[in-house]
Length: 267
Image (cartoon, rainbow, N blue to C red; front, side):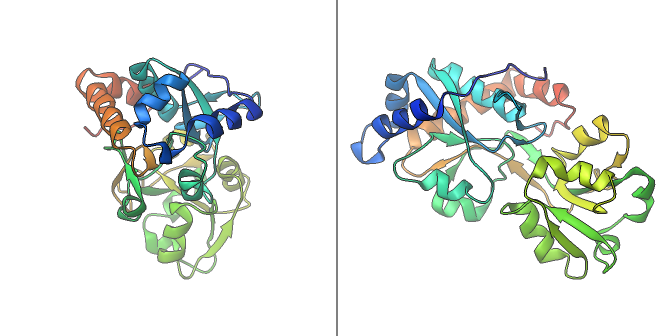
């Protein structure tokens, strides 16, 4: 498997753990609470190959999942994953009582998120691009080629892909599909022409489905970074996460993960 498989805690036990141990109002430092609990609770969508993906048996794998594992190692605690989604991500991070300590897996660092939450340093370069059918790669060489009335563009709801499409594609047909992981096959099977995606996601699908192409991979529409998201007031945890990311960059671990998942190393 692409990464070490980790088992999700039972929902009842997980919620009990969150309710009992994770109230920001206690004033107890976040790292201390996590260490006493013995488990790092990680929110992730599980629909974003190869960064965070949940298999049918409940196990998770991916680039972000491995970064989360390194954070848990530094804390010397176990790790458990809590399901979130792109439409509910912000609400889940800010929920009371707190349901997880941090969120990871394809989360782009933005000023809007930093206004209400904390975001770590970047651990993966990112940018918007497209997937299309391989036999139509020559058809889509620019954003203007996509923004046409006859082009069907598919996005998942609630995230930055949908926001980008709505802001930049005013003539194309925008189709919202609930499950992000199903969109590449929808494009390959002809139910849409283009998927708005990221340079972190597109290579995996091109490598694993010869029907697909990413003709604009080398010239993304946007440039950014992916990081770890958490609620404000957890500055001690943020410092620890940034320290882990810095160490992974310094010792070559981050580069190895880029190579493992077929992603361009940008640090």
